[in-house]
Length: 295
Figure 1 (cartoon, one colour):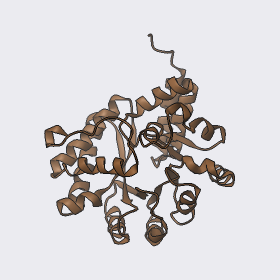
Figure 2: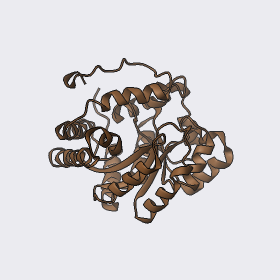
Figure 3: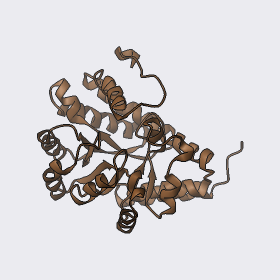
Figure 4: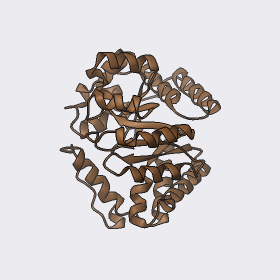
């Protein structure tokens, strides 16, 4: 950020979602050229590869950048180019999901949907942002996206309660739930999400930073797993995925088998091609069977 003329936000817990979103907006405003977007995508791949990541699904809000730089095509194409270079350099496979803020007009989501259909690297569409804004006004777009073969993944059940999850399921046709931790507020919904096998993209550290849970030790992750839900671990914030796994080991006492189960759940929940999923699952099995590294 400093190189581009910005000032990093101070570390610590955000007071609310608006403060979190404003911090992200300050970063977004610094990105102005194709080289900026290409570099971020490439450096993202480098960081992920350094942790041992082999496959990523990148969520990108092309429309928010497009309104600032003139069109969404430039930032999206630059990100796709950066990810392609990351694949060539680091062997990390990637796909792109385009998202849309709940606060923004339906017309912008229609444009994002049409943009998504033009690029093979874009495999899905989703709704994110402040969950106090309902999904219902966007339902027609998601019907069209579903008909076009795009995957659908919506943030729901993070700050808002079970009603936001119900909307995501019934009106948004969501295939995964971004966060979804508030599902525990409704026993019937827990049963439905479990029976339908809808994966939850749980982001423990992010939930703490946004003040949704007081501390990592009080996070509902163990209860979500105990309820038999399809739980995956994600970042959605300031941490790397490897750090998330290590924190779960430290705070909840998870062993290698627990972490391998969570990794396998992520592979199953992904939209990766079946042969790649099989390779990734085999690699998790190899890791689990390997003797522990010397301290």
